[in-house]
Image (cartoon, rainbow, N blue to C red):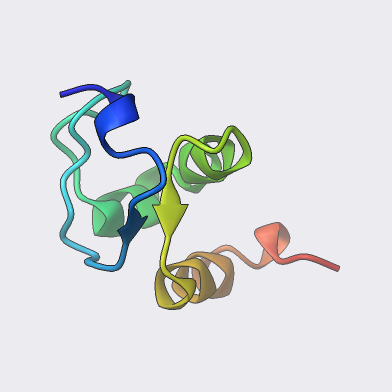
Length: 68
């Protein structure tokens, strides 16, 4: 599976496992902790769409990412 199969699908499950990329096989929950900048990059490139609850958690755990 590549990213085009996930494109425009809103991911709302923290345990969703990345099917592609540098962190293939890692869950969204894990990436929030170990690679929040990667998730931000994916979002910025429109390669992934996360539910607002996951984005809120991402920003809460990484306050430097919160929009001013």
